[in-house]
Image 1 (cartoon, rainbow, N blue to C red):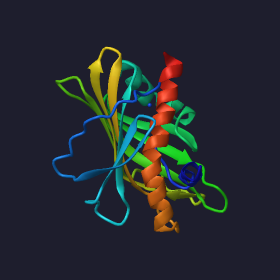
Image 2 (spheres, rainbow, N blue to C red):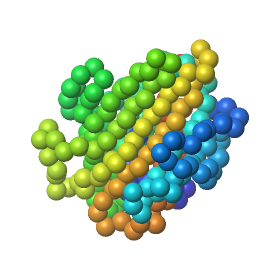
Image 3 (cartoon, rainbow, N blue to C red):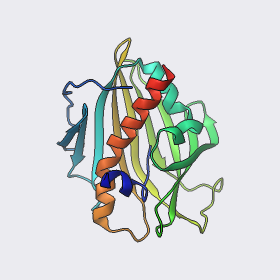
Length: 211
């Protein structure tokens, strides 16, 4: 599909989803509008982004317990098994048990240069049982920029896992990134809108295979 092909010039990083429609309340600081529902995944965009690149999030119910979903997300070395066009992802540093510095490389179709990202990955566990993973680009001497890659900017990335029952988890993915380089804005925004669906579907397959 066009969406999947265009993904190769950008980035990012869930078992079958139920066909039910989820009631998702807008964030207190962000106005969200549903733009698409595909295979049980709801996709929302915000008109309050800080620039011309759209901000997108997607929500689905996974037929698996939160521990199963968490295991896949936290296995950084296996991200390439389910994240489209991801060549490799690794942990550069563990500042603490819940704060990691990650590095990811993504293939892009010729003649575009491949992209790479260095970003902080923070795990937050909450009293009500839900877990959030926030991801934001940082500069680090642990991985200087390389000429063969365009260093992308992950402005705001998030996974939110909410346990519904022992074997059902609601998963929310937010993706807001700037691939940088000379890419037309319309291509960037197509990828921004399509990525959450592709990423969720990849994670679903990975969780299902691990069960």
